[in-house]
Length: 133
Image (cartoon, rainbow, N blue to C red; front, side, top):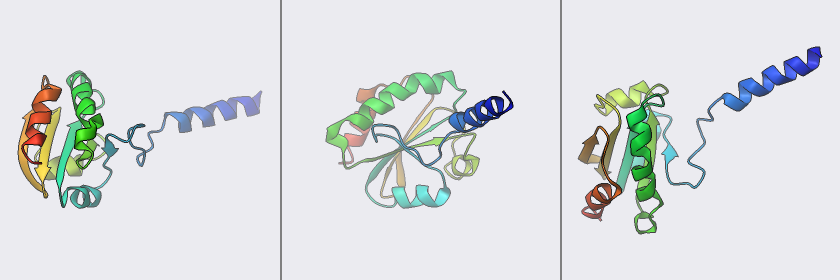
């Protein structure tokens, strides 16, 4: 019984822990886990980064539109990343993200478009990216 309880506690601790190196299961949104990685990923080409907070219901509502665009084969050359506020506040601060959700589109590391708050459709996001390709 004692070992069963220890096993359950161990299982709970490690199954609930978020794996910071894990990306979206389908590879559409890569989890950004450092400022160095963020800088490297944005350095060249077109990129979209979804800044969000896990507790934010508006962020959860916005995610399907972002994911839909990220899955679009027409944008296979675009880098799609995401940053969780509570895990990486230094990245949030360095990119002037003041609220959630925020979607920023970069071209060669330079911000060219910013969508703040929710309600941005996949077609609106698509159009902003398409203008850069």
